[in-house]
Length: 221
Image (cartoon, rainbow, N blue to C red):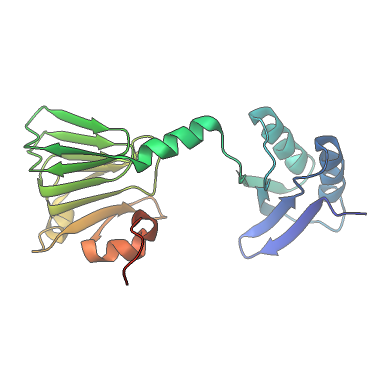
């Protein structure tokens, strides 16, 4: 009989790989049996992988409840290789770029659904907001908010990074004197969201290693 729920142990806890071809009812029955097995004792954090199975929010909640009910297991994430039409459209928009040429003045807001390229300075109290990445070919002295639609992989890059506020997704960093000193280097810099939730400033040259997926250029060497 085919194994519908495969359990793998990792340093972080357990990974439950669920079959994506069987019926949903059969999957729940086997999941219930697997998590109720006395051999699966002790507390552990669990990541559930749905593969190519699409589940509604109610079904994801049901799978999570079965996994955690009467056990010491705690589900920390549910991953799927399937995305909704809305998510697909959002990703398409975020991959598009818009260019603004000129100075973003105090009190002015420039927005883009995808990447935003500003050819000019962003003055203090000027704000640039993008669903994707922000690239400023000038001095960024105001407020920059990248990944505004929930993209935590977004970055902010500028010829001269001296912003008062940097925000990526919902993580906000107020540029303190210490961070300002870090940004006072005579080279282009970028800001990205570290996995620990803090915004890090680094040399722009490091961007190709930090976010290699940004480059879409084909060919060359």
